[in-house]
Structure formats: structure tokens, C-alpha cells
Image (cartoon, rainbow, N blue to C red; front, side):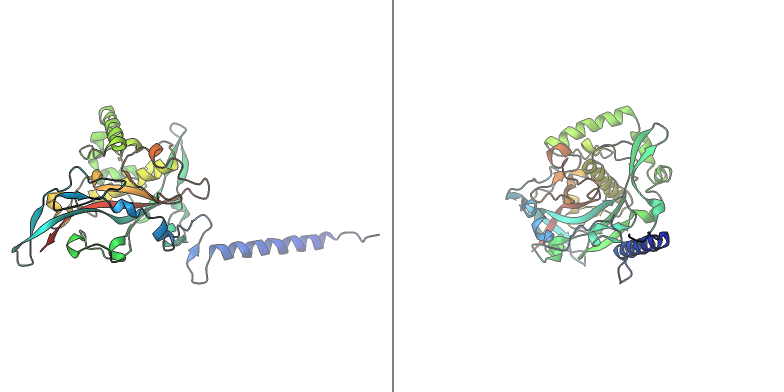
Length: 351
């Protein structure tokens, strides 16, 4: 006969397995260099072969030189871009120097939209800081039992052509950024998770909280999908929804590509409102970019980089997700997004 099983031995085995599981979990959430890594924070693998294979290089076309549009690509030159052939810009002494007008689409910024605060997929999935108090994602709204969404964003300088030393003249570097850099964290912005505080910085939101202003967004949605967005309707993000309030909360439930695209657009609009993003398109920007407090929507196009890349196209702000990306998410493991922001730059190439 087999001897009876000792309950004390079973308890010791169970405790041993529990400790092993805890150690394995701890090894997944911490690295030897002290930087936290969390399973819920994905790695977008930006600095890998994806930097070549999952960037829409054809989106560099068309470009405009001396008033002539050259090449063809997924986009076209914005309607309000400069179309002059020649230009003048002052030198350091204020003497006008003649030049030729050049306009082109360039990759300029990365915007990651995440549920876990301080999660950085662009930086390899590291967790910059543990702060569960600011946790985002889907949540229930007690007032009307509907779903709301809250996301954080991180804003990176990403002048890819300058970083690769391709095609860019110094005169066409509108804002002076030369390298990859983390520029803004919404976790440090007290207005991003408070509609009331955001209203203090953006009181114009009261003008657009009415049925007439919201109905106008239907026009913008159609134009953004069929042609290009209407810059005068700066409070609209086309088919994605209303830009205001400029916070990380959306009080309805859409698809992840649509919701995160709206959050990314709100982030750019908030930075324009605070003078941290500039207008780089049009005759006034030929010599240098300038502060523009409202969002110039047709200056930008977005390309989804993660989790499912738009490797061969990009899209206007507000363009219907059914035309470019309603399927570009992976449930559970791919609900944090990285968007590449393309920007049209008009500049004066001085002779």
C-alpha cells in the first residue's frame, strides 16, 4: 500500500510553486537596469526594421517646387499651401534674400495613445513611472450608464528625414528640431484629465457645445473623407467627433482606431492652442513657422504605425476609419496606438 499523503508536504509544494510564480512575474516587470517593464505596455519596435518597412515612403509625394507639383502619392498638396514660384526671406542682418518656393509632406511627430500611464511603446515598452491612479481605458459613466474612454498621450519630435540626412535643407526645418525627442507627457498636464480645468485654458469650448456647431461637423466629416478637411471648422475632427474639450476623455464608445485618432488630434490641437505647435504651411510660413492658436487640419495627415501599420498610405484628420483602418487594432494586446504625424512644410530655398 502507498503511504498516506501528508497535507504538510502538499502545503510546502504549493507554497514553493507560488513563490516560483511570483519570481517569474517579478522578472517580467523589472529589468536589471532599473527601468520598469510591464506586460500590459507593448513594444512598438520603432527602432527596428519597421522603421524602413512600415513607414509610408510613397507619402513623401507629391512635392511642390517653384509652383509646380511633381510626383504622385497617396496624398496631394493641401489647397492652402503656397503655390508661388519665388520668394524672399531676410538674412540675419535683415537684408532680403531671393529663393525658390518648396513645399512637401514630411514625417514630423510621433503620438502614442496609451491606457497605462507612463507606458511608452515607442521607447520599447518601458514604464517610465508606476502611477495606477491615472489608469485609462474604457470606463462606465454613472450619470447615463454609457461607456467613456480615457487615454494618455506622449508627443515625440520625429524629424525622420533629418535624422536620416535625406532631402531636407536647413531652410526647410520649420521648428528647429533635429533629432528624436520626448516633448510632452499628458500625465504631467493637470488639464488633460479634468474637463473643468481644460475649460479655463480653452473657454472657446462653450461656443461649440450646441447642436448647430455639432451639425457643422457633418460637413467636415464628408469633406475629410472625400476631399480634405475644412480648416475653418477647427472645432471638428470630421467623422471622429468633436475636438472639445481638449482632454483625454471621450464620452461615447467608438472603435479603437477612431477613438485614438481623435485623442491624437486633440493632443495636437491643445499644443497649438498653447503655442507649442506651429503652422508651417502657406505664404506666411515660407521663412519660418509661426504660432497658430487653432488647429490647421489640412496641414496634417496621420499614419497609423502600431499595432497594424499603414505602410502604404496615410489619411486626413477626420477621414472615416472605414476607408483606412477600422480593422487596424488587435483586441487585448493591441489597444495602445502609435500614430505618425505628417506635416506639410512650405519653405523658401534661398539662392
